[in-house]
Image (cartoon, rainbow, N blue to C red; front, side, top):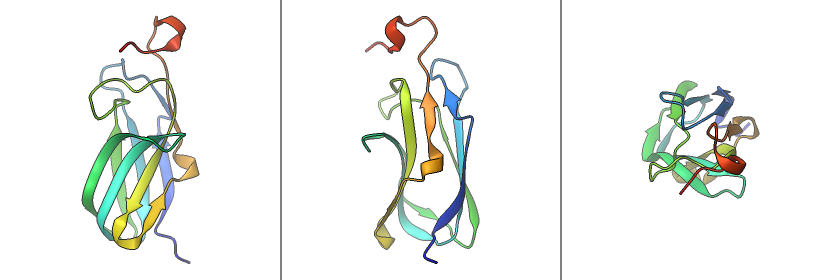
Length: 119
C-alpha cells in the first residue's frame, strides 16, 4: 500500500514549556526503514521549530518509534503558543510526511500578558 508509518500517537496533546519536566511523547510504528531521516516539530506554516533527528536511521518492520518534545525551539527558547505538528522526512525515499493526527498545542505560560512568551 505504500505506507511507511502508522498509529501516530501524541500524549499529552497540550503542554506548557514553562512547566518543568513537561514534554510531549510522539510515537508511531515505522513500516519501512529509512537510513536518512529527519524528525521535526513544525508550525502550521510548515516552518521547523525543533529538530529531533537529523540524518538518522529509523528502523522498519513495524518498529515502534518514540520521540519527546519539551515545547522549546532549537535555540532553547519556549515555542510560541499555538498548534504544532510532527514532520518526518525520509530523504532516501523522497517522502515528507506530516501526520494530521500529530497535532499538539503549546499553551501560554501562566500569567503572561496576552498569552505571549517574552523574547
